[in-house]
Figure 1: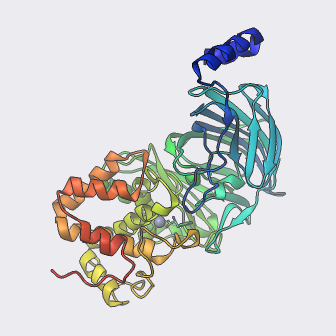
Figure 2 (figure 1 turned 30 degrees about the vertical axis):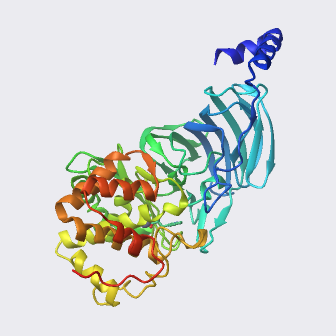
Length: 472
Ligand code: TRP
Ligand code: ZN
């Protein structure tokens, strides 16, 4: 770390260093960081050679024109000597880049923004990269036809990023394996609200017709879970009986319709805390957009985005994601069932613990295609094994959700309730604020329950054939 400053100041030292290393055969020569993390489904998502620790976004948005402008400051650690490194950014104009305060060269190819710092970065060095950018962020169409990225609404916009849309509104290391903390500051015209992840640190008038909202997300977050929502929301705050602060932002049109489900959010947070272990973040809440804005809900960290008034089951689903997906995040996009299987099973558990259908009955309904018990029972839940989606366009398909939930129910059948709930809590604690692969989970499940679960993995999780009702 010291060496870099020295080297810039004293070229003689550089020469000396080069000689020394030539003799020892090692090299201090940096090389370009990889342009992708080789995710099985999104190989170019994320970048190699560094780890982001913190994002500081300071963004101004003009709802009338759709223009976003500002800076992204990344604090990162080089994991190799770097002559250059990439960030992911899809669209927008880059106006300038500095690294360690010094102007850096950059160029762009597709969604790769390549930055060449004035001086090389050493392995282990912490550095600060600042990108100044502006433009009208784009809406990204996913493999399955749904929209993400930056989505304009009647009176504002919302940024959502699963799986790869966040690069449409800020530059970064856009892969869930590189989690970081965030400070997101949003500057919007007076009369608008601007909501993001975490806690509102301040809300101020900038004296020039704008309101400045400073949001702080203290716990590590995968970039696909970041959000910025601008609009004329009704804001309400409360606290769960267990003490978790809740902040909801709801478009006026959906306020009445959302009330029944949102009134239960504090209870859902505490229910999850009892079942899955302590709520993993410093706050909770919801952002409710008009119906049709997204066509889906997203578990953006601490504050999920809903597209229209949610039912309580959907609130349960997105809240469960705070443990499974947000705190324990997938190591790759192939491990999606670790998110959706758990969040779906949480709905099944909520139902059976609140006088509704029991999970066993629902499990059987899927096997039998009984839509009286669950309207989704006839969806093609067996089309592929949840741990092996056939491709990136299929990670939000029925098997990832329902067969994923059935995997968990099979574990419960084998291990019994006590060991099963101990496993669920243990898993959330073991990988809290981290990442996990499917193999991490199966190993942990066997160790924690003491059961041989090979049949569950072979037939339900990895098997190509439609599973049959287990003999019991
Ligand atoms: N994660 C969301 C949910 O179930 C659904 C979703 C939105 C999704 N976008 C996606 C799933 C992209 C996979 C990929 O709550
Ligand atoms: Zn989900």
